[in-house]
Image 1 (cartoon, helix red, strand yellow):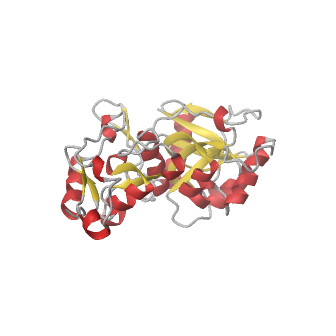
Image 2 (tube, helix red, strand yellow):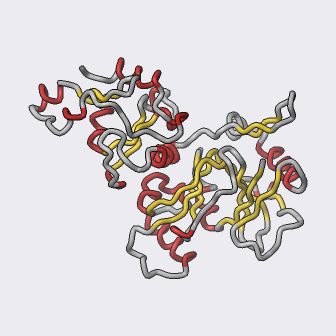
Image 3 (cartoon, one colour):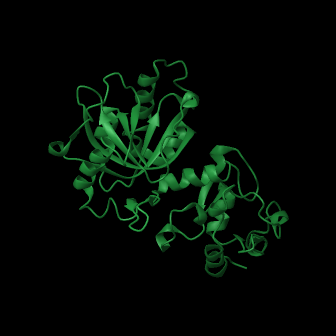
Amino acid sequence: MKLWIGVTDNDWFEVVSHIPNIDEVNFWQPGGRASTFKILQPGEPFLFKLHSPLNFIVGGGFFAHWTRLPISLAWEAFGEKNGAHSFEEMRNLIISHRGTDKDRFDDFHIGCILLEQPFFFNRSDWIPVPSDWKAGIRQGKHYDLQTDPGKSLWEQVRARIGGKPDYLPETRIEDTARYGTPTLVKPRLGQGSFRILVTDAYGRACAITEEHTLPALEAAHIKPFNLEGPNAVYNGLLLRSDVHRLFDKGYITVTPDLRIEVSRRIRDEFENGRYYYPFHGHRLHHLPLNSVDHPSKALLNWHNEYIFRE
């Protein structure tokens, strides 16, 4: 079990720490295709450390996912939760860290560390960095949660957020009494993270048409979030934008046995639909590699019963 202390852009921190009721952030990496992050497992803590001379832990979040995204998609998914007030401000901030503006107007890629349930300390609660922190560290450093200084640092963090139930109800590191083995509880996803995790789980291709033009793809909830559908990959399908609209309006569904159904109402109401009917009756073959992320049969049944218009 680990935590990561990430060196944090002060301007990024200033923006996200003042967003009311923030539920997720994108801790981006400017390096794009050269970026990677494989240190943490979902649910492990990621702490924010400001640039020197502010050598303090000032907040954090819980790791959910790492990916590379075009900057435009990162902005569409997270907006100000990217640590900027506008897309152009975000672009300029990233370019300032890249050290070149030769691709200023390109839709360049950035590394994206998606963190859920972020928390921020009052200045009086800032925590000094561990004694073994070196001034030359540029990106960050990981610590074991079972031994000091990682253990004592995490205890200090918990002391500051443990009494705030919005932060740690499901995203916590539990100690199993019988075996003494730490157990991770995956973090609740925000809407932006839901979109990106579904996008990556489906290999960036539409589950029905297998279209893989990324700007045309959207993450659909099987059961809408506003009807208590969870922001979980098993409640999602990656769909081309037109198919997404038809799915949401009940003209297309997927049955619990993963058969695609296209409503006759498309023909009846619009005298069209010839592009969609060839998919009717076909099995959904394009699924996430991890079976845990496959569409929930119960949620598909709900969509069939309450949304689909036969």
